[in-house]
Structure formats: structure tokens, C-alpha cells
Length: 240
Ligand code: HEM
Ligand code: HEM
Image (cartoon, rainbow, N blue to C red; front, side, top):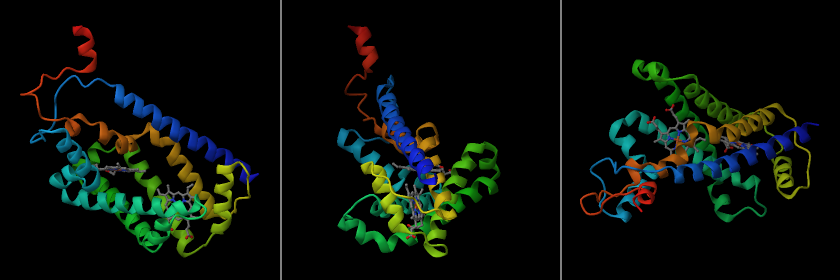
């Protein structure tokens, strides 16, 4: 019964996540960019603009310039999350890729760093009056959801171990349409229910910044308005 419920839940969550992201990419890519609005000083070449987006994604450059505390907690959370997710690849691959094996030892610390960063971001929303004023329930809920996912994961790691071989069999089973039973301990069920929730809300929430950053005109446009006249796609059609 439990296996069936979770199997269906993860099929629905995966379809929502993949379909939702595909839809958002299409949507973002087809929104007109009528104006040249790169935040200055901006790169003059396409390669420069690409490098700027890269620095934004890899180092959170503009956040670093504006607020060191948020940058620190933000980087702790996002870098931790990245490592945790890469480490999780071992549940979905057989044989496990060699580089996934290599990062295993760091994954545990990444989990702790991720939750510490999230806690810092949560406290900031409560403690800084200016930020508290502009925070809405969704801001807190996203952080709370991620903190609970992290804590339930760490709980399995340190206190209430789950049968990770069975967990892996369950997920490989979902991928190959050959179902295996899911262990039924509480931390695992909680971890997975929250992860499915995260996957389902991702395409409809502020978490979309992960995609949006690549489409942000203030970051990805080339500062060449003195050389080339900027005409957006829809305006070019009108001119014909
Ligand atoms: C390309 C990947 C990503 C980039 C470049 C990125 C970048 C950022 C940056 C710069 C902020 C700080 C915003 C600010 O407060 O000024 C932020 C906030 C946040 N990010 Fe990401 N992010 C990425 C992916 C993700 C993913 C995959 C998740 C979760 C599944 C996530 C969850 C969050 C959350 C919850 C916050 C809000 C923290 C808060 O202000 O309370 N991010 N992200
Ligand atoms: C279907 C997807 C997922 C499965 C099957 C899964 C399963 C697991 C399992 C079995 C553990 C315990 C590891 C151990 O005992 O060695 C764990 C730990 C953990 N999980 Fe997940 N998880 C999933 C998604 C996620 C996501 C999306 C996040 C973050 C947003 C996350 C964050 C963590 C953390 C922080 C830990 C503890 C540190 C670690 O072991 O890496 N998990 N997860």
C-alpha cells in the first residue's frame, strides 16, 4: 500500500517537475525583451555576458557586492545543496559513477552546511526588521521545507538509519517499471514526502530563480546599444 502511494507520488512529482520546468523554459525564452537593460558596468561582448552569467551562478557575484552575510549563508546553503544532490545520485545509478563515489565523504558535511546556511537565512528573515516587513509566508515556508528535508536526511544519516539498499531498489524499480517495496521508517517517509512536495512546487514558486537567472536581461544582455540598434523579435516583425 505504502509502496504504491509513494510510487504514484514520485511519478506525479517527476512529471510535474520535468513538465513544469520545460514549460517555464519555453515561457521565459519566448517573453519579449523590448529594451536594453543590462546593469552597468556591463560586458561589451557576448562572451563577456556569458562569463558574467557564469559568475553570477557560480559565485553569486552581485549578492556578494550587496550583502556579505546573505552571501555567506546563501553560498553555504546552495553549495551544500549541490553536493548533497550529487551525492544522492548513488540512489539512482547502478553501477554508481566513479565521481559520485569520490564525493561521498564530503556529502555528510555538505548536509550540515546546507542546514546551517538555511538556518542563517531563516533567522535573517525574522531578525532584520526591513527583511521581516517584506517577507511573506511563502518565503518562510520554502526555507522551512528545505530545513525539514535536510533534518530528516541528517536524522537518517546519524540516528535512525534506513535500509538504503532497499531505498535504492525502490527508486531503480520506479525508473525501470519493476517495483520493489519501500522501507517504512518514519524519517524516510517524511524525507521523501517533503522531497516530492519540493519537486511539485518547484515550477510554480520562487525556486524558479534557479532557471530565471539565465534569462535575466539585466545580467545576460550585451552592452552594445551604441553600436547596434536593439530590436526585439516582436518589434522586428512589426517593422516588416
Ligand atoms: C542555478 C542555480 C541557483 C542559483 C544561481 C541560485 C541563486 C540564489 C541567490 C543569489 C539567492 C539569494 C537571493 C537574495 O536573497 O538576494 C537565492 C536564494 C534562495 N535560493 Fe537559490 N539559486 C539556485 C538554485 C536553487 C535551488 C535548486 C533551490 C532549492 C531547491 C534554491 C533555493 C533558494 C531559496 C529557498 C532561497 C531564499 C533564501 C531566502 O532569502 O530566504 N536555489 N538563490
Ligand atoms: C527522491 C529523492 C531522494 C531520496 C531517495 C533521498 C534519500 C535519502 C536517504 C536514504 C538519506 C540517508 C543517507 C544515509 O543514511 O547515508 C538521505 C540523506 C539526506 N538527504 Fe535525501 N533523498 C532525496 C532527495 C533529497 C533532496 C532533494 C534533498 C535536499 C533538498 C535531500 C537532502 C538530504 C540531506 C541533507 C541528507 C543528509 C546528508 C546526506 O546523507 O547526504 N534529499 N536522503
